[in-house]
Length: 474
Image (tube, rainbow, N blue to C red; front, side, top):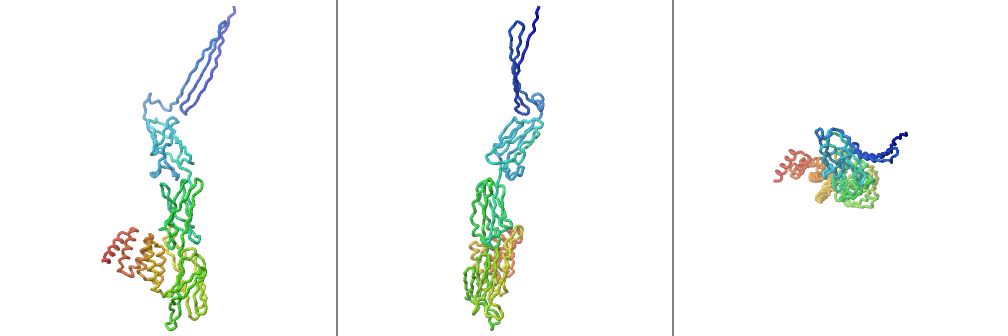
């Protein structure tokens, strides 16, 4: 008797895929075969599909537990501050994911919210796409507890804008305020000691750049600064702007003749004075005075006739604003050499950041007595310039008047007004103080000083001055 045995075979194919940290899918298919002695083979297929989820907590439907909410905002942070501030722009349509399973987009105000978040640690991620270069200023993903607030800062790769404010001699002008205007925002900068400025963190685009005329130091003309410049800032290349301010420079003096009977120098009217390098000629006025203005920096030779020969003087004008006065010529005076050389350094003008505004200081070649006629001419021209709104030029004329007549109350009042209009209240008040000291009944000086005191916060002083002005005006 022969006894047989049963043969069994099996084949299995398995596939699995993880979809998240907690979820995975498994597929399996098996074929089992069996053959009995004397009988045919029989095959049986067996397949199954399994979805596996790993719970970090006991499911809510089994044991109810407290749940929270994770909220936050996405915001524009081009300055890389790394924290949400009130003035920062919200960013909409930023994708936020929670535990790789739940997703939402930020709203128009940049906010998002996940409700029903179980207790424990959760992974929250911000996903942002843009054609422009960008970077996260906060972590792009975090592990947080339920009820957390998570903000995401996003900055774009930015460029900048640079430039200089130079005078006509190629020297930088310090302390000038630069205003940069974009589509939605305004920036300001102040020039350094070399006249340079730089504004960082600007998006690529076009900007209007303008130098604030009122911030120019005294002694400069703002004629070339009236119009803004259109500057393009590139993604990888900064924009550039350049401004030029003309410095006021002048040379003045008198031609005098020694009167032996009077025993003193007297003015010579109608004498021809020549500025050789500029081929300029002028005749002295009735007070013997002459003036050459609006001169570039450089060395100048000034000449005036002296009977049979010509007297000359050499004057050096520096890069900064300067008014050189009292470059005088004396004729028929024994012992006076025909040629004199005057080496006069250019004084600093304007103000540096953190320093008060400084007026250009006069430099005298010789001491002479003030002449009322010439002072009055400068005074009248200064007032005309004030009326035209050309305050810096008015200050130059009124300063010339005061050098010739230091106790000229009208000129002090007019210069105080010009200084106030240029927001230089402290120096304006000093001029007005002196004008009132010279003329205690000067109602207009009290009025201007009252307004200047009010501008600097001196309310009691302002009230007293304005009351005194009203009293004197009646």
